[in-house]
Length: 292
Image (cartoon, rainbow, N blue to C red; front, side):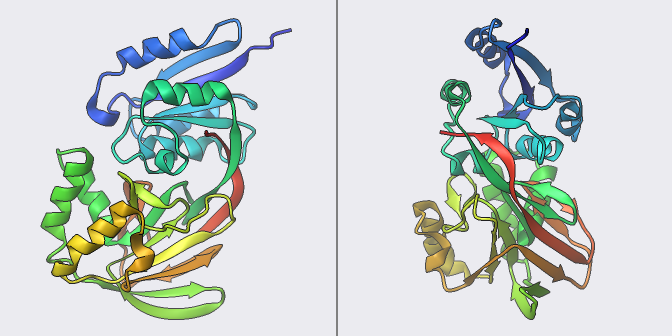
């Protein structure tokens, strides 16, 4: 009888802009073939991670090796199934991994996977598209779109796009329906936070609990330019947005947003254009994750 554990590493070779050869050698050295049936796959195009997951048997471990986009695609292929996900965060922001306290050092992240401690976490759906960290509409979506089009990656890529886009961006009108109540808001962006941060240790929703069956809806009004240094400090100090008057938080399991035109949304860092009506809801305890 074969008692080996199936473990599949799905590697985004472009994540972090670094060669993954050493990491692949490390993976093969760490996992004893007598105990683990190791399979290594490298993604070749957007959506490939989800496709790879389709033929992975139940009770396997699937490790997303990349950034939040790779994690998102992997979740899309395994959420709700009897498959456990591990993460080796080698992307840019690594928001979910940071929230779960998974080390950004690949060798230490491998040790978390070998320890085998798992927890159940929530995932979300935005117009039927899965997300596990944060989705958002408005300036958030604009930033995701510009980042995807740009050549500069990582934190500096986001910062450069922010400097270019923020001054001229006009807040948009949204109609929200939450808990059966409708409210009209004018916002820079609206984020739906499953975890507490976008990435880079920038906290958008300090009270977010990834296992409470709720999303933190963050309604952010546009600050004055002179307020930005203070806000940036709060974001990185993790006192974060609860201390900023221009941010409103609402915990909800489902929210509907109506806009006057189709706009790009940020879905775990990827820009996706959705319809005028957006339905966001949580899927409680739908994913098993290996975490410290």
